Amino acid sequence: MKEKKKLVALAGFFAALLVILLVVIIVKHEEKKRLDREAESQMSVIASREDLKSLSLDSSDGEKTVFYFNDSHNVSKITRNGNDFEADMLNIGTVNNWIDSILVFSIEKSFDTPAEGVSAYGLTSPAYTIAMEKTDGTQVLAYVGDLVSDQNGVYVMINGENKVQVAPYSFYKFLNTNFENFLNRFVLSLQRSEVDEISFERTSTKDRWVAVPLADYDNGIFIEPRYKVTYPMQREPNDAMYNLLAMILDLEVSQYVPIAEEDMAAYGLADPEYKITIRLQTGEEIKIALSMELGGYYYGTCSNNPYTFRIDPSFLPGLNKTSFELIDSCVIHGYLDDISTVQATIKDKSFMLECRLNQDLDFLADDSMFQLDKRNAKIYSSSGDCYGLLLFESIFNMPVSRVDYDVKPELKNVEASFVIAKHSGEVLDLKLVPAGDNEYYCFINDYYSGFIVDRSVLYKDNGHDLSGFGVWDAYCLLTEAIDNKNGNDVYDRP
Image 1 (spheres, rainbow, N blue to C red):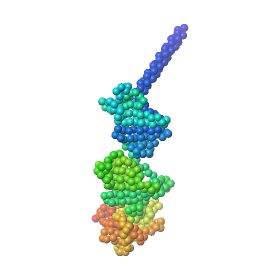
Image 2 (cartoon, one colour):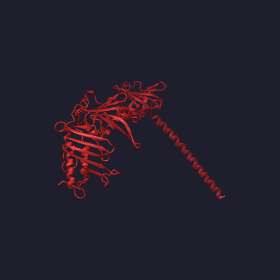
Image 3 (cartoon, helix red, strand yellow):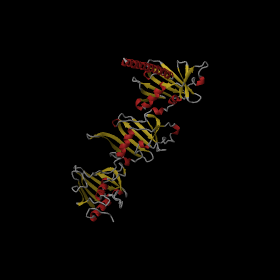
Image 4 (cartoon, rainbow, N blue to C red):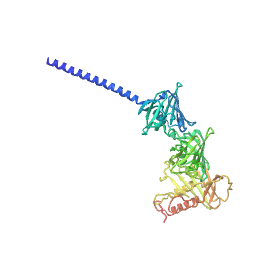
């Protein structure tokens, strides 16, 4: 009997707990509903994005911005004072955040429209008018007037509602958003396949180069973009130009900076330092004008964008390099693994380099041969520099100092010639003909190439610094090293 009474008491206890729990749940639910109703009463919903066809913002200073929505309720275009900005020109994240913050905003307080009207709140001549056209053809208007006296809010009135609302200052700040923040900072986003030619001019130096895209190089493992420089000489760009070209086609600005027409000269844009023209396959031309570096930025314009901007120099690396620093500007090319022999004659002295690498293309290996006139040319300084490679590099790293396609030099009075035989069977014949006292015209396979080199490509001696030697001085040094090497094929100049 006692056990039965205990069970009854326990059941009663649990029943009481259940009742209490149900009461708590009901009370909390009602409290949540009350809080939700209060929260709803503290929010103003001007319209739903899903209902909108367009939203325009007119300011009292005459600026007008219109946002257009597509069937997916996303902004498809913005028109600013008559200029169209399609979706690919917009910073969509910023645009969406702005739209959502305008359509729904919190209310600090509200009160019925006073009998004397709303002029005291700046609502008869509003600072902003927001006009929303709905997909059903109806329109909603919202007027934004003066800031409240403590500057912590702004007066707002929605047409059809007989009350004035006070929105927080953050709502007013959203309305004051700089239009440039809505724009994508990439003013260009071009595919190489769209481009026919890119040309560049620098005003102060009169330097100029032109590059055209070629078909991608595809070796089955990776795809590499390729270009050909057509001016000042027909060559391949070096890595610096490849990098610069990529940055130009995806041109990113640091910031849009409104510059009045009368201030263009002060920002270096009345006579731009850099002029870049991109001709598309369609024939359309996009022109970019940039100032010299001012205060750590280039200021510029782009013909497909109505806004002036500034660019951090890191966004355009190599922009201030000369054309000869951006292209492969050596007269001829040769690599240890593709050169068989070089027969050279300078004035009345001839010599021959021979190269044959082993199957691993290991220059240092004993079974790799590198000779000057049948003598081992793999002679090193005690610091590890190779005298033979110094001669090889002096031949294949002759820098073009300038080009001149208009002159018609004769192939006579040859001061130096180099006949290069490659393992592929190709033969190049380079002849240097004096062009005055300090330069040479370059003839390749007996045709004038348009290239002109400095006298230093033959005659230049950097002393103990084993770099930058002319061919003749590198040959003399290698001969000296071969004649005076020690048993370990090491030689140091006394």
